[in-house]
Length: 330
Image 1: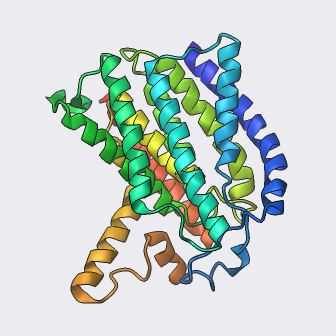
Image 2: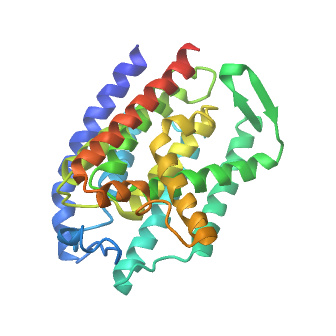
Image 3: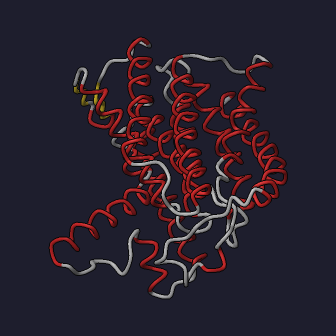
């Protein structure tokens, strides 16, 4: 119960820091002309969003790190292998996303880092992740708690880490297409992993993992104050890549890799819609959906953006509640 109390207090602290930070950063981003460039397929529907500042991920990234540092200096949290892995992934993917956003703004088009450059950065993070994961005494196991299944896959676990990080970061990135959509779903997902972390007493640093998750939830709520429709700022790749990879990290560390599919059901749904659209078009030269990711299909059907976001938030919440049922009770 004490961990939960600390976590809720952490959430409140990071929320306040995030809101105050946003008030300073958003006008600065406008002055720097860090505006969002839209896809040609969305210009008509999202014309009013043209020029909205991007790179807003720093509004929840920096406050989360600052709040954790503050708690560390106060002696309330420690730095251990588990939280070090989270911090490296969190900062590493934020840096990759920041570079991508910066190049897009500088070049005045939608061409940032190349796919090979992104993959190289992600590979470096995955290698360091696997090294720290191994020296921390963690076994390379695929662990399905509900059915008591443990599969040792040896060094292949390193590739598995890379796959999870790349898949989860890209999934959140694809979902970040409507005001508040990715941010709200991330709040739900990290809140779920924060609760799951409380119940992983066998894991070194489980308290810190829970507190960091709640810190991030608080910062994200602060960001959402300015990101819900009509958005005053977008998170950009700076935020979306960072959030997705960190979600994958929590899934790996808490040994709930497969449960991530349920917790991130909307993220998975968005990604699958893109994959199906691409291959269906290659085979038939016709579109399976009006537009992918699938949230744009609802837009093409005439749905109001806010209603789409609300629907997807509800789906994400239900999926997370189901996942908590599996992780804590079954």
